[in-house]
Amino acid sequence: MGIVGAIAVPHPPLIVPAVGRGEERRIQDTIDAYRQATRELLALEPECLVVTSPHAPLFRDAFHVTTDATLKGSMSQFRAPHERLAASCDTELALAIIREANSAGILSIGSDYYRDNMDHATYVPLWFVREAWHEMHPGAGELPCPIVRIGLSGFTPDVHRAFGQAIARAVAATGRRVGFIASGDLSHKLLAEGPYGFAPEGPVFDERIGEIFDSGDLDGLFTMDEDFVDAAAECGLRSFQIMAGAIQGLDLDIRMLSNEGPFGVGYGVATCLPRECAGMREEPAGGETAAEIDPCIALARLSVETFVRTGKPAVLPADVPDELLNRQAGVFVSLHEHGQLRGCIGTIGATCDNIAREILQNGISACSRDPRFDPVQPDELDFLEYSVDVLGDAEPIDSPAQLDPKRYGVIVTKGWKRGLLLPNLDGVDTVEYQLAIAKQKAGIRPGDANVQLERFEVVRHTAGGAPRKA
Image: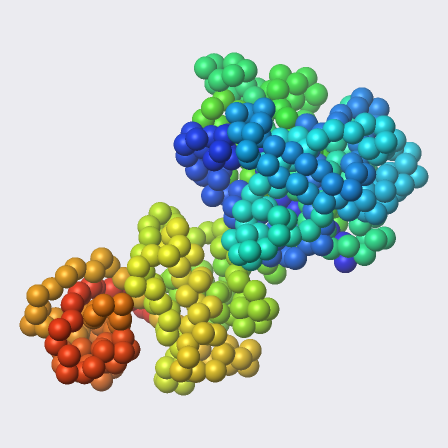
């Protein structure tokens, strides 16, 4: 037990749609990275989330650790009073952190000395946590676990590192699985037309933060000149320093996912996660390089193997190509074992916000929900072969004469009954046979000609081959 992973994230209020009212789309890269980082952290199943916040109570000569039982907040100060969130607090861990820090000579105080509501630098990361939690577990409660909120201080960088180390010791002593969220914006001086104006140190600071996280050497967070940092008008450095101390010595894969500042304030998203959780980032088995594996096949394999081994959905990897993130489509995932069909489930139209998520979703269905087969077992994984069909738009047709079972898939519809058959399937060589199978799947009588017909093309992805139209 201990700290299982960490993320560094910004806290612009407008990233919450109720506040941004469409403006948040200008930082879509930040939103996408934020969602990815949050899902990856929650996939580690933390029992508590420690959040360091620049806008929690801040003292020159002490750290604040919230010891209240609950922490509530809203976006009312940002014109969204109905946007609310409440978090339970892990008071036991909070008190353990205070004791551990004080025993190390680092003054730390709880809510008896200062009490307030949830600040926006805590609210925004927890908004993404709630979103990811409800996406992973529809109908679940407000948040997956309690939190500990921690403020920054006027102490030196090395004391912030030492305080992070005290957090890690307290976490280990209580036996918790803890995810760490370091909330903090970057420079506030990126643009002359921005809310805080421009300083040349601003863009340099943001670039340097990106280099530090990309290098994986977080010691660089402690070596910046104080005057340079002040001129950059940064927000999150001390939050990141606490995080660096807390995860010091852990074998983590550290990287910057996004770094942008179109409004004049820098927003960076970074992850510090166990290397075994890096998913598609690592070299696949069998000697293939990542470049040689079709990304659709890699996603299907990741989905199936993760679900079969853990019973949980896979987290969307960091390096999914843009074409799978920026498009929606219906997708079918097919599994074969020793040349025989082992599962095939798909969606006629898009049900997710992009193709990558559609593949992850349907990979789970193919291995566990195809009514023709028992769920796939772990000892079968090494023998599975995968194919992924990405469906094109369906077009109505007037006659079976417009079908070609090698080129077109078919959708037959009568009332609420609907059946689909993919193109270019072994043994399906005639239009008549194609229609008969599609009708059978829909529960329509084979001789019933009073049906609506649609045809579609697919791009078929297979292991070891280039994507091609079926």
